[in-house]
Length: 371
Ligand SMILES: Cc1cc2nc3c(=O)[nH]c(=O)nc-3n(C[C@H](O)[C@H](O)[C@H](O)COP(=O)(O)O)c2cc1C
Ligand SMILES: O=C(O)C(=O)c1ccccc1
Image 1: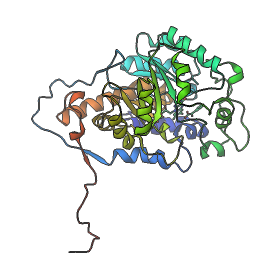
Image 2: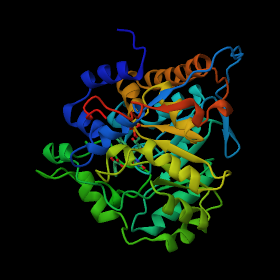
Image 3: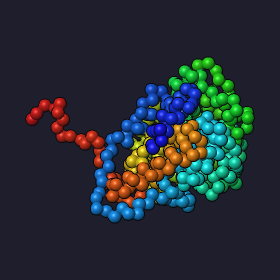
Image 4: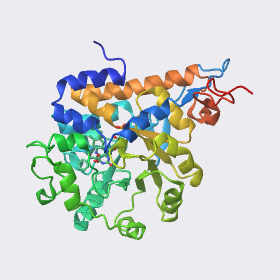
């Protein structure tokens, strides 16, 4: 089968991956309610097409922190791309560069930052951090990122610990031998499998500093001159607080349903965050974006760009760099089609008038009594 959508890559990737790896990629926290809600929320909006608009030159390129993107999206930070393909983040960096997409590298990447940077060339990349107890390790990463041409630091704030993910507990999931977070000291690595527990959850409990507060942000600020992005904000209150603390951009995210189960779908939280921050503060979003139409909906609700998580892993698992590149290219192609067919040829034309609620609110439902 020739894959024509990210969903096609999902089916092909599943057949190639060990069951426990598949579960780690696909799974969420708890009852996976938020995981499902991320997708369901996209189905609650329909697109209101405008006709007889000149759509002969659609353009979905954009700029973020001074870097040019061919399309308004990037690869979400995800640990250990070598679980999907042997080249790991090197393949992803080449794919993102070829597709003109931003790459956000996880602190738990399996390849060295400097190598990833070489593979990415002049394409834009950011580094994601978790706040480890070992602040020297954080300071070291911040310095290396700046030296290797990373354009921003992304602090993930929705994970004081990794959540209880039932699939990983049932599988006693651990990272296989030969895959390691090489940008950190071996002493900070994820441990071995233990029956009935998740090595990743256990590791986070040991290594993540869950005592940090807003007051600690100034420490990280002062370690770097790079823009600072907070990932995992879902409320207007925290969005305002972030801006007050000098944060340069936000990612509205529930971590792909992998952290607080019961958190709102990212798309539903997006408008309150967009409305809470100044217009010059970029708001990104991730979670459940699988189609070009999903991108159009997120942008219409005020996102400057989106991050793509699992679909990139599907492409990597299918065929490494070309697979990941094709997934990103498909999303850009689908977005361009959406711009043309909805009569909104540029990203500036995507606003809330593109969307209507679905199903439409009724005054009178069939089951309501007459009169
Ligand atoms: C396998 C996997 C590993 C992840 N690792 C990280 C990580 O290291 N750091 C982080 O901030 N988010 C991590 N995330 C969350 C993603 O950055 C992103 O928020 C989420 O996957 C977006 O949802 P989507 O997969 O539905 O597109 C991970 C997600 C997955 C699926
Ligand atoms: O962030 C995650 O979702 C995740 O899966 C992870 C992986 C390795 C270490 C910490 C978190």
